[in-house]
Each structure stands twice: as structure tokens, then as C-alpha cells.
Image (cartoon, rainbow, N blue to C red):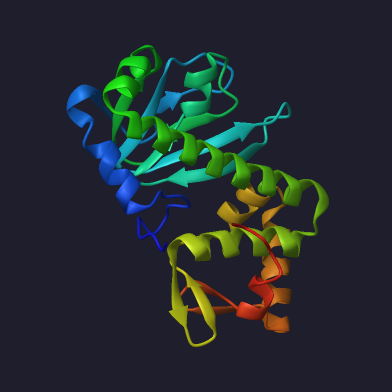
Length: 226
């Protein structure tokens, strides 16, 4: 299912699931964050998770050496922080609003009551958590074992599946990505990203159209990102 969203977002759930969660907004608390304000911090416990109503939230991991690895940019109709809230453990990532953002806060202590009254909500969370774990595992595998070109192609292919539109030369990724953002999401340097994208364009793997990346179908099929 194709999903539309903010041009900068890298994740979104299907509209049907988002609508079902939005219907619970009268049962939870709405919160707003300014640009640059932290929603939750890596290494700190959190008893809540968040459904993004509007705005943009950057999810990152900071390595011991201080290097930031960007996991996702969550636009409207996404959930973040659920793993920590469920497990009751310190968060493995940080979430920061990169623009004025409104979220719905779901407190873990209230989930048993919500699940009893709305059993479909439990199924939604289970499905979303499983999907996010699969994508995260794939990304970690790519970052550990694959060449820069394969890491970049995996990222663009996944975004193309979620936000892509048909193009004469393949699948156009309707997410605005700078070289810096691609570097942060693939674990390579910006210079390496620039060189990699140049090689991919020269080989016909990738095209540019009005600032958007277009992935050749023949190359995208090499990866399993589902």
C-alpha cells in the first residue's frame, strides 16, 4: 500500500491503521513540542509512547564516540517510543521534534484498559512493532555487512515502497533527502555518499528528476525490503 506524507518523512503507517489510532485521541493526552525540543532521551526510562499528529520527529542513536545515527524521521501518522514503553527499560534512541510538533501520548500503565476496551488497538501495535523491528534488523544488517552502494540502495528502495510514485525510469522517491541525511541514515560519510550516488547514476542504478531520486526497477528488485 502506498503511503503519502511529509516530503522529509522516512516512515508512515497505512492510512487505515492511522485512522483507527486517531479515533482514540479522546482517551489520551495531546502534547506539543517546539522545534529542537526533546520528546524522550536515549538511555532514560520512558513510560509513554507517541503518535505523531503533525510535525516531524527525528529518531536517532548516539554512539559512544558521539556520532549520531539517524534511524528515521517520523511525520504525521507514525508511532515512536513504543518499545521502551512496553519493556520498561531505558530507551535505546532519542526523539527530537525538528519542527513544531503535536503528538498523542499513550501511557503504558493505561494500555491494559485500552486493550480490553479496544482489542483492535493491540493488534495494530503488534503489527507495527513487528514491521519496525524487521526494517531495523534489515538496516543493521546492511550497515554492518554491505558496501555503501547497497546501503544507499536499501534506504532509497524502502522509501520508494512507502512514498514512491511511478516514473518513466522507475520508482521516484517522494522524500527529500540531502547527502548529509543519507550519510546519517546509512552510517557512512557525506563524501562517501556523494561518490556513491555519482557511481549509481553513472551505472544507471539511479536517476535524478527535479531533486528527487528515481530507482531503476531492475536494481530495486535485488533487495528484499518487505
